[in-house]
Length: 268
Image (cartoon, rainbow, N blue to C red; front, side, top):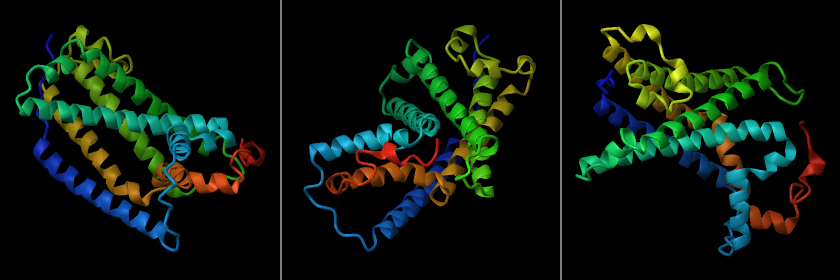
């Protein structure tokens, strides 16, 4: 059995991607500008070693949220790092494609079909699973184990459903591809192989189904870029960044979360 080669509509995808990224960058820039209105200019001496260290702790580890609620922190970390890691993987695959177009031979084949294939597959499946588990846990927390302080509206459920669909469609695409892939390729897809579809093994339309599902998954991802600036998700990424940018000033003022945030736990 050989792996199926199927058509991917790269040209319309890249056109849509450029437009979506352009809109997202513009919308986020407008949000940043509006959030800075009425605020004083940050000090040029603010980026000390201490400030950078706090920035890393707040953005990468999100210490403030950890101090407030361990369960919320775990869920947020699964979603946050799932997105970041999968985004890095997508960028890496694009760089491999550009390297091949530029005439650098062997690098893309090594990571897609050679010994480096294991790294790509394990990376994608592991962080895809982290993202999916984080989204399912967030859904459970909002629907079943909702705290009294937590307010839900329709946009919360739409966003969660959309993100879960993105994660599941990625695994469905991988499972459909693995239905026609040799065991040596599917071995490292420890999550995607459970989404393999037995009926697809003998289907004469497997290439068409792969193209259709790839297009749905890829363009759904671009749709998220359009929705991101208007969603609550943008605050999940901006929140720790804003905290970190003000790290030096807040440390000098000894704000409540520095360093005794544990004394102000609103939610378990």
